Image 1 (cartoon, rainbow, N blue to C red):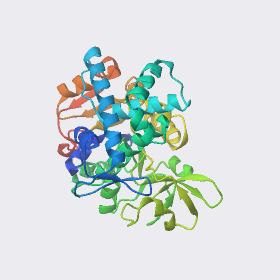
Image 2 (image 1 turned 45 degrees about the vertical axis):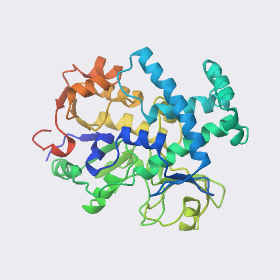
Image 3 (image 1 turned 60 degrees about the vertical axis):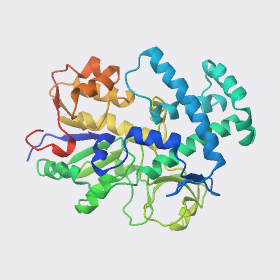
Image 4 (image 1 turned 120 degrees about the vertical axis):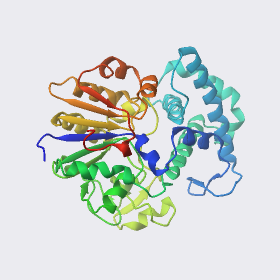
Length: 374
């Protein structure tokens, strides 16, 4: 057993072992699926057979249009990573927030004018409101991801290294950028008690900020939210974050029946999508609380193990870089193809981490890692 604290940071790459779709698969589904329909609760549901839905058709036309703009920019700027849904969502967010005056951006005005011209009929279909059209596209993407990330094969043994690490250090902070619930499933299967910031309950559970400050045992911090989290308004009109079991057999607009405290939800699962827009989310609500915790607590660790992360989130990269420049710290980056990681990671990685003596690379998959490797 060691008294040197170890933390873990995980990205979506570790979920591929459980057959969850990769970024390309999610992107392709969003752009081309013919098996999704908008129901009366205003949410989008996937079906096993093709369905006809004018809302989905209208949204996919817009998304394909924006995809073309993004790919042309990639060619112009010589961007090395491929197009994906995160960029699409980021552009939608910029457009919708500028149009709604949340974050005005004059540079987008020509594009907004062009969309209004090219999509006049589609905007008319969405109550003659461009903001409504853009937000509907964002909602559609949100729900596709929400459903795709529930389709694992049930095998979560890639996390066995965590059980082995617990024999070395009884207190372990795990930070994940993933929205899926594979880690929670693993801990439940292994009967490992863990703290995720919510009160203990087999049904609906309430986020309790004071639990975030726990320093013992397994602490799981979901920096980008989760597919089983929702914002509910309670009977007193207050809005709070709740965790809802995914096996609850009802449409989302009926989730309030789980708990007598609840009154209303907008039905949108609480997790972050996009690229640079995530930086703004780190400044409010749950995301501010957990990101601030991340900034402070990682500095208490002597070693951080990173796997499945492509180093494309500038907010996360900044904190990792700060850690790596502290004395007597070690960063262990687990990736099966270092050359590919170097090719697609954003600037801070190349400047501050690639040749940093405190950083060690292990070219393996996360499920192949042993204690001796670490």
